[in-house]
Length: 231
Image (cartoon, rainbow, N blue to C red; front, side, top):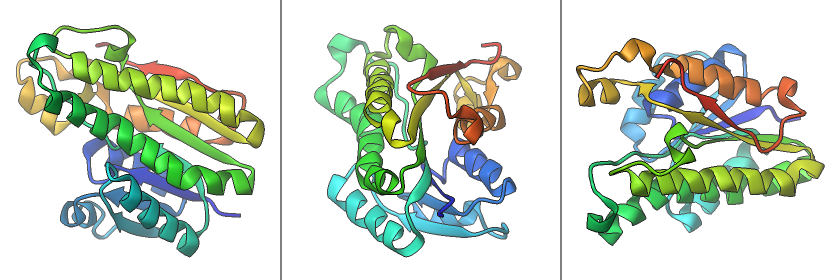
């Protein structure tokens, strides 16, 4: 039976931390990102069964074809970690043009939906699977100058809850994490005066994701778990 773990956004800071945690547990991984150079360099020299897939997850047809081919080659996904996403702020709702909303919806919602469309049928056929999405603590309510981001991550939370009800009787758990500020190089660069020790480390968040991917989480369906550290 396949123990393939699929990690989208695998070239990013959180994606790398999640992948490394699963590698340590001995899983086979399918690492998905749109940037082949960064993706391969992030795992250079690492041991383990690693497969690389380069595709644009915002493109539904391309994602279906790419992940469909990967399933044929490596078997159905046992775990799908939808890490791919993005953040933008600084524009008030009434000033944000359509491109801001489209970008956040594409990066956070379309990537999640397209990966699920491609991989859930294989989980259904196998009668088992774990899906972990990434919402955000800030999406529990609207925040000033973060309207598009909060809305997109709230959609991810609602998708998680809906899919959990649809798939729970088929042996598939769907849950999400909702982090606050993640301690990444990009966030440190954007907020140099902040106390990063209060933020959530990528490894702490990866540990929660690994728990949700394990059999210990079999009774959990549709949870959107805050992972906020001290922030």
